[in-house]
Length: 130
Image 1 (tube, rainbow, N blue to C red):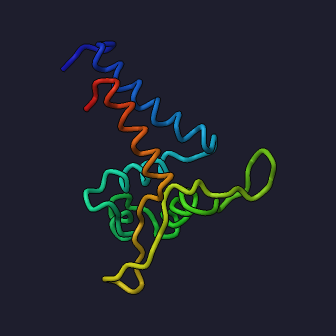
Image 2 (image 1 turned 180 degrees about the horizontal axis):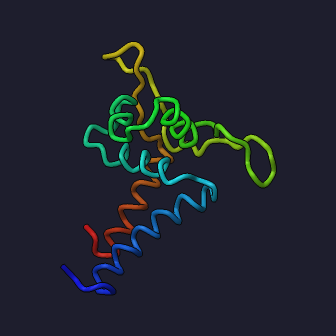
């Protein structure tokens, strides 16, 4: 293990900060759990995640996960604290019906989500964190 302040530790922290900055630029009030959902979906080898899998990973109520997904998709569940107006979603993911579960939903990246995911990966690669 490297001592605190080691260059490798600094690269990891810089990479995490860069990821958070990408989201903060899109919505300065975004919650960390919404960012985690995006990263899980982006990292999924299948290219999507089922809502029920997100619920298992998160251990949170279905309604909580649905609100976080809506923030990343098409609408915020809360008003903008600065203006009091309804905020649009970020358009980074979309939900579609799960063909294997008629009540279930599949969460996958939109084209904008794929571009952001690619940008994040490129930043991590530049930082030597492949």
